[in-house]
Image (cartoon, rainbow, N blue to C red):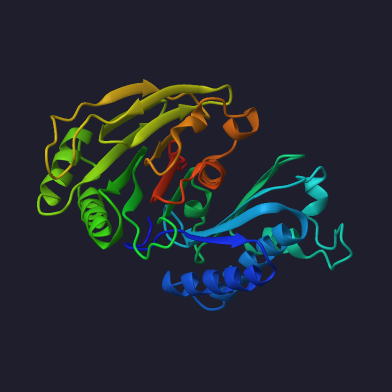
Amino acid sequence: MTLAGTPTVHVRIDHYSAVHLAAATARSLGERCGLPGAMPDQAAVLASELASNIDKHARDGALYIQPLAVGGGVEILAADRGPGMPELERCLTDGYTTVGTLGAGLGAVHRIATEFTIRTQAGVGTYASARLVPPGPADAARQRAGLTCLPADLEEHCGDAGAIVDTGPVRTAAVIDGLGHGSEAAEAAQSALRSFRTAAAAPLPDLLTAMHRALRHSRGAAVGLLRVEGERAQYCGIGNVRAVALSHEGVHHRLTGQPGVVGWRMPSPRTHSFPLSAGATALLHSDGIDARWTQAPSLFVLRLPPELLTASVTHHHRNTRDDATVLAIQPPRRHP
């Protein structure tokens, strides 16, 4: 889960100096997340190499640096508009270069990261996720889940929050949008997040009711809850947090929360169930994301794994004047 009060850090890669900022940001977060030994420096290398690749080869690129949504560790997401990589496998080989450099970039990322996922399309761009977790079972790094949570530009505090909790074969997720912006919205979001984590295994209407009680003395929030088990999903929401179900073929479900405010005037919560076929993804997002992104997503976007889908939606459809959260999940991996 994310560290409380730690939103995603957005580093726009519009100049080579941003490479150094990305590295320093990743190192600092690695230290905050408790990565042992040299691992914070390894996080810095991952960010530096991904940022350098954008600086040299792409445009409109950025890194999104954050605690890993499930299980602990650090995740570095990269997104750009660019030429893509027609020869991706060669690009992942140490020593391969198209600009006369040493060519250690993506090869180094592939070696250092606990889990590295990359998708590219010629003429469109590239999305990548590098996850770094402490030594031990690497299941957290391989989980099919993604989460980004960003404050509005120039805001110190983020009024959104999100989290994912796994309980056996069941995955439960929340996106919370504290009303307004700034510190009071952030306090409401964090109060709701604490309540969610405490009671995440409860039926979704009961969970929303518990969050409603926790927010009675706050400015309130919009909340969307999502539960995935096998090939079924449930959504329960109050306010403008949207849920979407995607398969490789298209968008199959679009749901919005009931009118109301969690913490103030909340109607009796209703749960909506819908099928989620094998390989499909369920996604939640706050209203800091333009809902029109679901109207005609490309097949390339529809087939992105959850962590890269969140990067794509955030990078291309975020309203920078509002807090914005995107969360995407598939059923958790089953252990043998």
